[in-house]
Amino acid sequence: MPRETLLPTLLWALLWTSLSADSAAETTWARNADWLEEQIADCAREQDIATCRSFSARALSRLFGVLGVCDETSCMNSPQLSSEIAKGGPWTALGAATEQSVLSLAQKMAIGGMPVVAVNADVGWVVMVMPGELYPSQRWHRNVPVAAGTRLDQPDGSVYGKGLNFLFSDPTKVTLYVYK
Image (tube, rainbow, N blue to C red; front, side, top):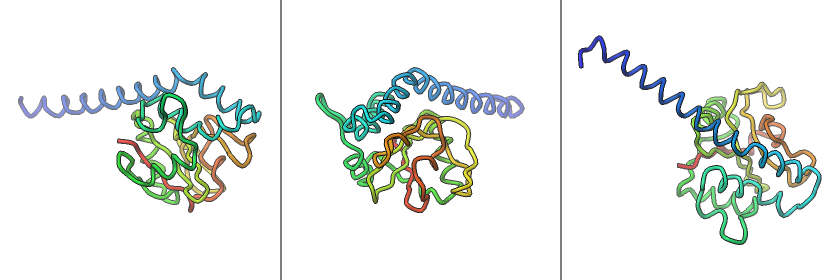
């Protein structure tokens, strides 16, 4: 291919890949939005604490088909899932939530349709990173991705579509991971 047509072709391919990934992530989350919001609302009302504890595993299984987090009868609770993620395997640590570059990368990967989670291993919380814009957090002094997750200590603080800082108060205790 002549050089003068190669650059536009590559740029178009990159743009198409980006748009396709955006579309895939938005479709997965949009298709499951009602279910996710219902689960979060049930947890906030303390309808079923066991369901709250397994929210992230059920969401990973339902949205992304992540294997091994649920079986025919049950799903891992948040501390079990946190331990499983920390083992590695298909999970890769992106880094600490104290780094803006890590938060930005997590957001881009979520927009690209990849399963991304934020984990506080000290308490065993696992939160889903959603596709969407970064939002400024005064508490974290960074721009943070939006998230969906349950607060096991305070169920009425469970959120859908709010910043990570609403679920975790201390970014020094949070690590972001991607499932590959």
